[in-house]
Length: 141
Image 1 (cartoon, rainbow, N blue to C red):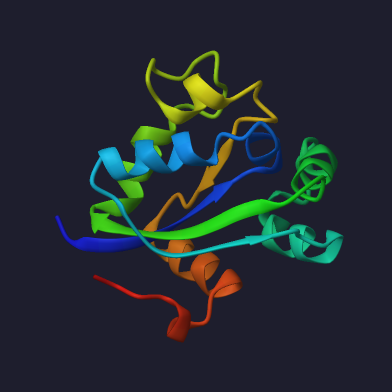
Image 2 (image 1 turned 120 degrees about the vertical axis):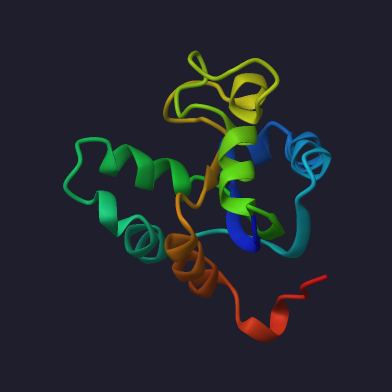
């Protein structure tokens, strides 16, 4: 295993429900370190660009509407095998199918409002991190 970085987003519904602290605690419990973080409100253009890979999928309009509905917390996580560790602690996309004690099982409302986003591969993580952060704002440990 290698030390990696990955992107994590606490989505608007979880921010609005005041779940940021609980979610960050779960990430830290599994050994991920938060090395950059900021709260922002995505514009429609930013959301469409960030999630552009899903543009042709039927859920795209709803995803965009949800992601611009309120502020998000974006963070860069670092740790051994960070992409996989983060995906594991997030749980399945559908909270009803997520393993107990995963973030989505605890904090997700439904498949659309599932609390968090996480990069799915190291290459995706690099692209997603660069979308939100300049390298000089990331502080590896």
